[in-house]
Length: 304
Image 1 (cartoon, rainbow, N blue to C red):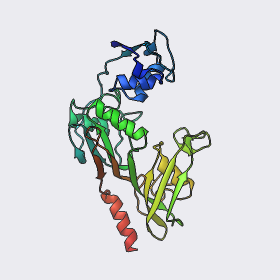
Image 2: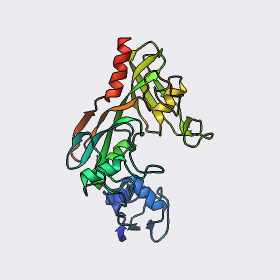
Image 3: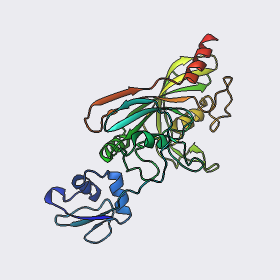
Image 4: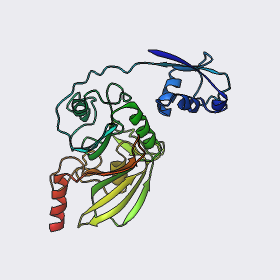
């Protein structure tokens, strides 16, 4: 555990506390700072305050930071499809069926275990014990691009880009039904379902969720879509498309899963990511090839 004290200077006075600390402690994200304030690990003049506290010149800020916990997760030699790598980030094309990080029912055999074996000690610890290096996630049965941070500075920068909607995420989805519109936007809030706690649902009490889609190709009873999400709510694309009557093929949670192709899990692929490199600021545009099973289904539809 490490305790540090900071004096609020003229430059950092009369602004929100979380903003002032972010300027003085650049290796902490605003989200992390707000959490520490809430937990009472950041206090002003010995008193607990809120993130919105307006700083005054001469305020003494005390920050208590705990050392990152040693992970108890085991590294596992699981093949990775690496799309891009340097000293700061690793971008992989996650295969369908692979869980991103350990959780209930998935203690091992995850992407995290694979990344730990590949990267060894060069991983960000901001994700805590369970998710070292993981900046964002996609569902088990969704394939495609994921960014992994190799150190804390890269992790903080990428997290801020995602929070500020500066990372453009593009997906390909095959849905049931011949869509009438060629492009549209779905703006419906999403919350955890009150009926089934393992599911998400469109709800007035939910958080804002915005999904844009464009038709790539129409078939007799199916449509191939390009989908861009503004927000990253859990199961967002799956919930939104099912809500408007075009569920993703193979999605057993938000449709009956019926499809003549026998695919297991939703036909949803994170095909493109656009963002600024966390350290150099370079514009990055990375793409991942469609899984062979997805290509096979599209081929069958085109031959009909």
